[in-house]
Length: 435
Image (cartoon, rainbow, N blue to C red; front, top):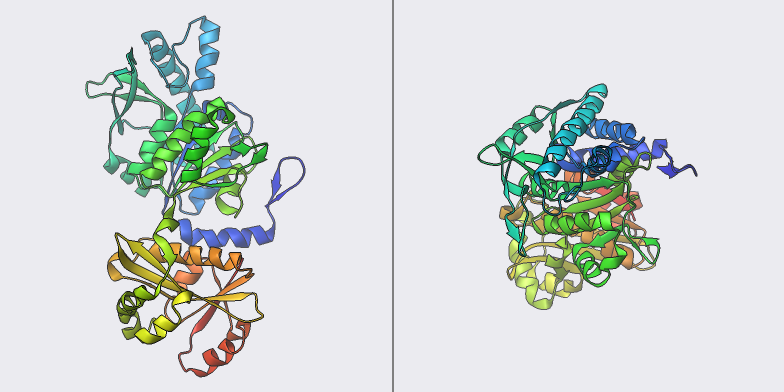
């Protein structure tokens, strides 16, 4: 998707082919999309709903959480009522709660009307049970609350029925009393408990910047350091989102995004473009991956035996593994190796081959293999490679659908690997990824 110079993005046919690569990757995944009240009130909000319709058409499950800050401030000014706080970040007195309840109903209705116009099923529920914050640092938070319990069965039933849950920042406690919940906190809790793939905060603020330069990708550890050292450099209305994005990632969410929803096509660009247009914060998954050392050779030999028996991997002796140990990366959990991958460089070539991708059976289908390949591609790029190739007889869907490789022919391999693949009798397929 390219910027037309007007802040809008035009979709090219090549972009559509790129999007198709993501379809199997995200199919049936859950995205939590948190909408600021200021964005719901913005003229571009109808385009945001169109983006959500596109995600649903690709079988991505969506939960919408909305804020009410701008609408609450506007109504309070009209009625000359002083709010204790507008964004659910402090005490909520009875007058503020009454206005928040009224405004929340109106914003929820506006969102549901927009979803209905786009042919999408949606529903509001009492699936969030709240409880009082109580006294925090000596201050009674009154009618401000936090999540006590989520009815995960109800949310999953709605998602399985192709229905978008619309979640407001007003929730009931055990006794049926209303409490105001900060929508950023609510979205993070939903993301963690529904095992979402993405938590997307959509606001009317740009993503994070350092010295005026936008930050597009940031490990969570770097964000925490930035938050501590440069707290004042973060816009006030992003502080809550940064705080809860960090908490969500520590709770197991792989990605959190801070995104300006006023930009046309922002949501689709952020999800389907490699660079994106907001700030993506990601977990430090790669901390478990390291270069292998000679002492790992025996463990690598043992964990790859099942792959050799099933003809998934070519046979290597322990001595051969020791000789090529500098080519191996290993995935380590609690001191035990549970997976491996190799990076093979070729003289006078910008092509690097990924091989011997194997994960112990107990850890398969948990994203370990994908993370190892992603890390290997990153390492290959750092070596100056422009292409990564893989040769496999049985992992066709893994490379094409999960890791985003394209199927090519053995002619794309450097010599002497090309001749070996053509003559070894395994009839392996060749996959290529551009870096």
